Length: 90
Image 1 (cartoon, rainbow, N blue to C red):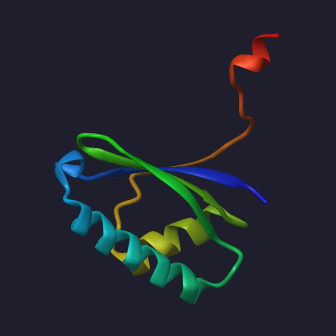
Image 2: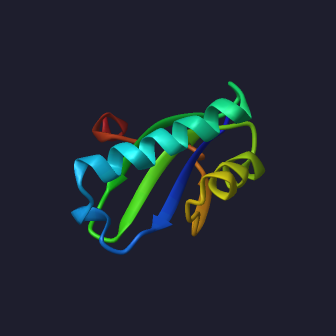
């Protein structure tokens, strides 16, 4: 199943409290539960003003539906074509 990177513009994201991040995570999980097992949240990276999320989903439209239902921005959704790491250089 395809993997996606979602870029979410969220000014001040890096200053969100653990409680704020927990509430956002709970909302995301609630929406995911309603959408069914085809879409999975893998992990997210919080920076100063953005959150980058990794999702597995059958298509981009389902990722966008998750964002819509959760009230989350999805400023960019890109399908991962391949993964590289230091071992790729070997």
